[in-house]
Length: 506
Ligand code: FDA
Image (cartoon, rainbow, N blue to C red):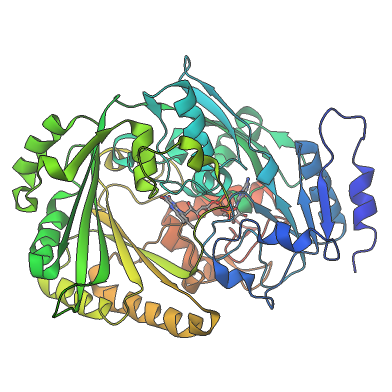
């Protein structure tokens, strides 16, 4: 075992310090399993046969992270860093190959919002919900362009990109980062100035886990109007959803950047005597402005949708956060603070980018395919707007101009026994989509982590091996990520199944 690790760890602690001692748990500790499972979002990873950390460290202070890094190095243990635990493949708390230590940032959640300077410092362990709540507490006319699920952690989300309902106007969360604090493999705490522009570039979309432990982020907060408008139009195939989606493919990315209109495709059972299964497309939108400004825009560019005032509700921006998170818009904002009370399921997700509209026959085949498994849903997110104005190389996130929309496929099910069957059906859906989506590489979104794309076999994975998945997530930015990784962590201390590899000759 790792006898001596705990002594090593305590030797770094100073009881006289003005902050609480870290929580340190071994596999025998009473609280170990509860701590491990606290933020596991995908039930697949509760499976008892899945590898578990040798130790769990829950820091209250950055010095506790430095201690865990030093001791893990000494004992040749890998580290996994967890913020919100939403990684689709559990890479923040599962290692498929090596013994490891889990550093869980659940107690590093401080947030300070500075309205006057339109900025905020947010610690990585905070959730998006906590951040939105803190902004709203100070002002209803500021917001932040990040994801819709309040329990997602800042650490994984910002370092992997991070998009939400206002990203066509303001870009990704990562695009709005202006400074950061990271602990590198030497245990040094660096800010933007001391880490240099290469590393600062890498952690804004390249995934933090390859480079160190990001402790906190300084971001620009953005101004939003006092009233925004949310609209919702569901249509089944029988009600003409097919034609609408065909039109949406052509105009979703061309709409004004204040308007986000996404399409969610699912399988529903119609009620009534002749109840049957059919595909439904729900057009859901957020407009940064009032209904009276929105209606003429949509009636002009998408009259087929038949949008009417009754489909729309005016609210504050923070209420729209509640809406897209599935909460009542008139309820208390406190629900945004509840980081553990999200519904959990077994799931598998994948992503694709679309650069030209899918043909009618392609979509018809897709609807047929979807009817094979009612557990599937697809979220089609329109690109364009600000996303087309930011250069592909500005951050490691390369999916900018030329993409008309992104597809997320999500399949969820209720029991362990179904896992294999469901995942294999998901792969058949992904295979079906091949001719209709981006190619060479078939692009994917890092924050929708997918180990089917390829994995590092061991700590010495070659550039060629890692390119199989690396080019899909990062396209031409992958090379620069490898260069930054090689320069900042040459011993490959921060590694995982999809971490950026070291390459000695570039
Ligand atoms: P988690 O803690 O699992 O970390 C993810 C990865 O980042 C791991 O590799 C981890 O080691 C690393 N990491 C975490 N903290 C770090 C730190 N401080 N320093 C260095 N590395 C760190 N995405 C999106 O863009 N828009 C959306 O609307 C949504 N919605 C959404 C809903 C739901 C229900 C889920 C489960 C996921 C999403 N996502 C999303 C995807 C989400 O952005 C993605 O899973 C993030 O990586 C999650 O960040 P966490 O900190 O929660 O994950």
